[in-house]
Image 1 (spheres, rainbow, N blue to C red):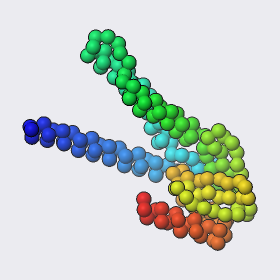
Image 2 (cartoon, one colour):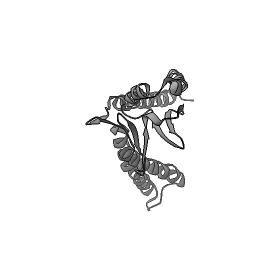
Image 3 (cartoon, one colour):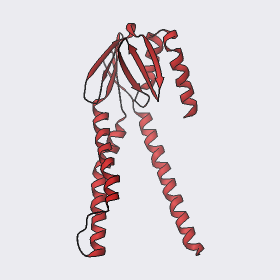
Image 4 (tube, helix red, strand yellow):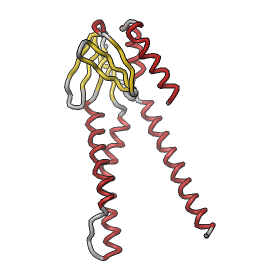
Length: 192
């Protein structure tokens, strides 16, 4: 057992861990700094643009990783060989995830108005609920769900300007409908 090689491996892993932590904090910081758009008296809540850029970079980087793996196998064997199937099992789902994130961050938006809340989903399907016709409010799995009879709109807590939605919810929805949801949200904040 060579202590120098063990120390080098530990040092490399610590450096990778620290760099990953710094990048994660930087992404979190940029996502929190994103502000919602205000168009007239409407407030548009969207996914922070930093996620779109990260998904785009990921979508470009993953094929490069596959090509790099093929090239390293070519250098070792002297002939072109496809990468290991495990690389495909990891990279192809990540590429689909990146595509989903790109479309989600571009298409999904919540529009807050004085009298209603409008949602556009991944496929740009429009849902609208009037503030006065809200029948219940729930908080589960990091998102508020605002119900109107059979229809509901889900507002995830990662949207830029989520705090403004909370202010609107307190302002336009009665406390007896939203009290339990706010208690669950406070508990969610304490646990995260």
